[in-house]
Image 1 (cartoon, rainbow, N blue to C red):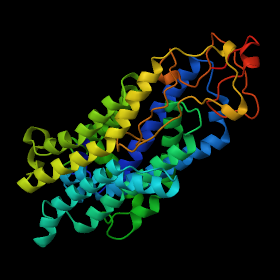
Image 2 (image 1 turned 180 degrees about the horizontal axis):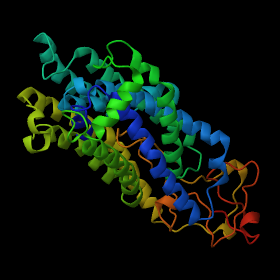
Image 3 (image 1 turned 30 degrees about the horizontal axis):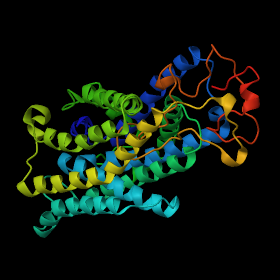
Image 4 (image 1 turned 60 degrees about the horizontal axis):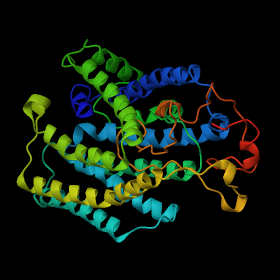
Length: 400
C-alpha cells in the first residue's frame, strides 16, 4: 500500500524511489551488524569470506532486477491487480526449482499452481475481452509487473541452492545483499534514460534532484511524498525482521497463515477510502471470485510446508543424543537443519529465513561466536552444519 501510494506523487521519479529505499537500508542494517558484532564474538568465519560475499552480491542483483520492474510499472498497475500478480512468484519458483534444483513436485503443489493461474486468468480474461484492462492499467506494464516476479523466483531458487548446507546469519545476509542491491541499482541507472520508460523528459540527474525535492515537499503535489517514502522504508525493514522472527519463534505454519493473509488484506485495503483516499479502487464480483480461487491455490501450495514444519517440531521434542555416546562417521553425517527459502514477496530479500539454529541468545546472534565459549575452527572436510566429532567434543572446546 505504501509503495502504491508513493507512486502517485512521485510517478516521474521511480529511480529516485529505488535508490532512496535501497541506500537507506545500508546504514540501518550496517548498524545492526555492528551491534551484533559488538555483543558477540564475531561472525562465523565462513560467511565473512569472499566466496559468501559473492553469493550475497548475486542475491542483491536479483533483488535489484525485481525492484526495477516493480517500481517502474507500479503507477500503471492497480493495487488490487498487483496483489494478485505478486502470487505468480509461486509457479515461477516451482518451475525453476524443478528445472534447476531437480526438486520433486507433488500433485498437491501442481494443483495449487493451477488454481493460482486460474485466479489470474479469471481476473484478467473479462478485461481483455472488453478491449482493455481498465482501472488505469496499461497492458505492457501489467506484463512487466508480472514478469518482475521472475527475478524474485530466481532469487529464491539461488538462495536455496547456495545456502542449503551453509551457516548464514540473517542480518549479515540482509546487510551485504542490500548493499549489493544498492550498488547494482547505481550501475543500472542508464535504464532511466530509455525513451518512454518514465513520464519525465528531464535529464537523469535533474530527475534525481526533483525526486529529492518532491520527497522534501518542495514541489507541487508532493505534500506527503516524504512521509509515504519513509513509510515504504520502515515497512520493508520491519517486514524483513518480523518475518524472520515469526518463522524462528513461531512456526512455518503460523508464517504460512500470515503470509497468505497479506494478499486479501492488501486487496481490501486498496478499496478503502480512508486508506487510499481519492485513489481507492473498486472490486467487481469477478475479481472477488478470482481472489478466492487464487487464495485457495496459495493455501494448497503452501500447506505441505506447514505439515513438514509440524513433523520437525515433533522431532525436536525428542531428547538430543549425547555426543560422548555417539560417534559420527564421515559416511553417516547428521546435518543440522539447513536454511530453506521460499518466495513470499515480502522484505528487501524476498525469502522466508528458516535456518533454525536454536541459539539461546536470539535469532540475530545465530551463527556468531559466543564470548562465553571458546571458538575452534572446523576441521577440514566437515560440511557446514556437521556435528563435531567425538575427538573435538572431548578436547575441551565447543563449536558454536
